[in-house]
Length: 58
Image 1 (tube, one colour):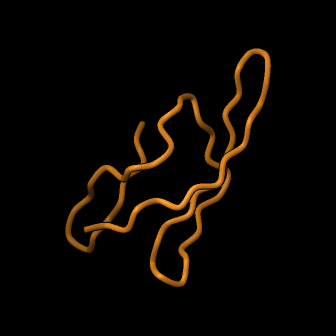
Image 2 (cartoon, one colour):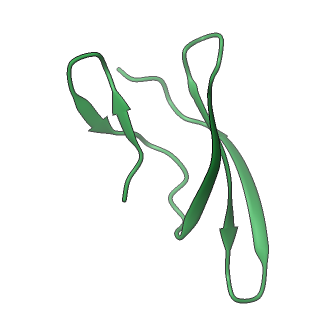
């Protein structure tokens, strides 16, 4: 599954954290319209968390 971005007329794949498997816990839109994503990555031996600002749509 990929993160998709809607530009008002069509969906396209959004660039974002690429390490898998990721669990997204929250999405938010910033004042500049950028999409922010927060989540975690779990492996058999550890957990790590990420907070990422995705590039704005072109």
